[in-house]
Image 1: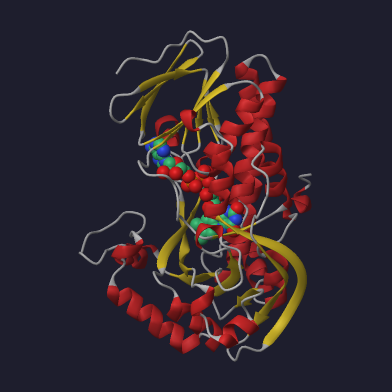
Image 2 (image 1 turned 60 degrees about the vertical axis):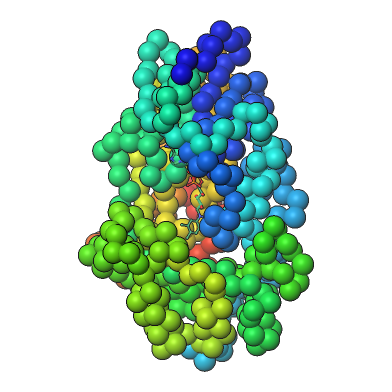
Length: 414
Ligand SMILES: Cc1cc2nc3c(=O)[nH]c(=O)nc-3n(C[C@H](O)[C@H](O)[C@H](O)COP(=O)(O)OP(=O)(O)OC[C@H]3O[C@@H](n4cnc5c(N)ncnc54)[C@H](O)[C@@H]3O)c2cc1C
């Protein structure tokens, strides 16, 4: 396929990845007058991925600034509390929070981007950098040329693999069983006692977190919502590898697609849930339609720019999900990239400024997520890890740290 015409007055960005960071980047770069095109490898629109997303002031700011807005963003909870095996409240915190969903964010951000410049079904393959231009090759033979390439293609980024193959995500030593039972399927007791709240249940070396989110098609009406359910459990690398064998006996490298998770793993999960869960949480487990497993990985990178390539979102640095901050970070990265390009005529200087601003913030976010992960008691290497683990054994401390707003202020980040 021919290279698209480079004869443009405007500067051009090719963005890889049509999810959160790709869409934020498209919006912010357009605002500063750049031509942008987003290329997503999925050939079908991105809907129904993931589930609950905790919001943060930084996410709200990025949504407003990008033009996506925050209309009908999600469900508000008035407080969070922890419960014991009998369902009794052990501690609580008044904390109003809006809980949204990945689908709603994708919808809001997608409306913000011209469909003519959002291309489904094009997977990034490789790139060449020459004379201040990036030439981008896609599966299927398409070639595009741009002033910068934005890598927004997630934790397993192919763009990062092309420019810095040595940077690899590391398995954290634990994984999540997750799902989102429908409000209409939950028992009256579950609906009354936990559904309206952000709830924690913390058996040893495990963490169960639940909160309400919109239903399908962002349905916010009572009776039509869902309850986001996340259950952290420990498994070493060998156990994970065994769990990554699917129902048909095929070994997967990172995780098994939800419909192919082995029946014996689900059966064991249900049996363990019966042994340890308070009845209201067991109700959630038993009513989830398709529970699935997400292994937890993280990484930081010493650089997030490589010549004319700028990494954003999970592709730049990926934190464990304990703060629920990944989308806020994606928005912040995209905003900072556009700001740097607006402030500097010279693109290389701008990318250096972007790297200087956001690479350290990515490090802080990932390191903070590792601290919160010490709750699970895995890989406690330093005295600080062990102290943090001890601290995180209290229900109150977990509620003070997990998915709370403004944690970056403790690190001097405004
Ligand atoms: C269990 C869990 C809970 C979470 N909870 C929260 C939360 O409460 N709040 C929060 O803010 N965040 C949360 N996150 C994190 C959040 O989901 C991510 O940070 C966010 O999705 C990152 O967006 P992204 O666009 O950078 O990457 P992704 O969402 O991973 O998107 C990358 C896109 O790139 C595409 N792609 C990949 N390779 C190619 C290629 N070669 N060519 C073209 N396209 C490609 C993919 O198909 C995908 O659409 C959670 C994550 C997990 C695992």
